[in-house]
Amino acid sequence: MKRRDFLTKTIQAGAAFSILGIYGFNNSININIKNELFFKISLAQWSLHKALFAKEMDNLDFATKSRSLNCEGLEYVNAFFKDKAKDMTYLKEMNSRANSEGQENVLIMIDGEGSLANIDTKERLQGIENHYKWVEAAHFLGCHAIRVNLRGGENKSDALKASLDSLDKLSDFAKGSNINILVENHGGFSSDGTWMTEVFSQVKNKNCGTLPDFGNFCINRENNICVNEYDRYKGIKELLPFAKAVSAKSWEFDSNGNESTMDFYKIMKMVKESGYTGYVGIEFEGNNVSEEKGIELTRDLLLKVGKQLS
Image (cartoon, rainbow, N blue to C red; front, side, top):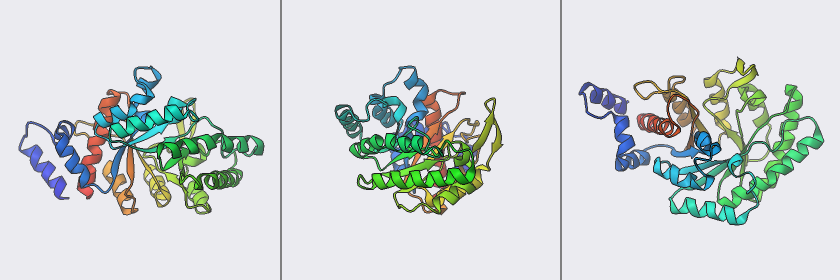
């Protein structure tokens, strides 16, 4: 609350720069604020997906970009080095780049390797096996986790049983590498907080948990329009007890630097109250500003809200 009062007085005084501008341009202030937070800030590589897919940026440049944007950790997406999971020379270079920039490799988000809620046992087991190489890559990179998807289910009960078996098998495999298997609310049943709670209340392995995303609560889409959306705040609250990572999704910002589609303060208050103290990953997906600007706006909002809560 003291921080909020300070911001109000600053605005009333008509300071030349807003507090967000100070965060963005004064690195020493940025670092000092970070040291007071209850969490650390990482950068989800998906925030730069337009530049990466357009070949305007290379996966190996990610660590340098993250450092330049004053983030501390790297959340990779396997799509940007999908043929390199077993390439030790390449992975060694990724480690070297991260180390030289003072960045910590946090996790790898895995897509396109099979549906882990699929009731077709043969296909599902193949999907589990497809993830093994990413567990090993994450271990080599010094990450603490990979993010997987619980997709492919058509019936809630059957999908739950299939998901539990997949998560048990995959987290059993990952134990020896000290890698956590995390599930994000990422469409379908995984965007249903009640269903996810039922899944994780039955998960046996301690290295298996959730990655609550501030967005992604659309359960069903028709013609690219969400027709069944789960309550964002209820869903996040339900996922947080099992969380081993958190994703700060953002889209649009108002003139005061607040995310206009959700209440970041409310969400981060829930994150703090849950006892979570790990990385919060910036994942900007908006179109109204550049990717770098969106990352900066999200970062500065996290700094402001984190200071208010610390």
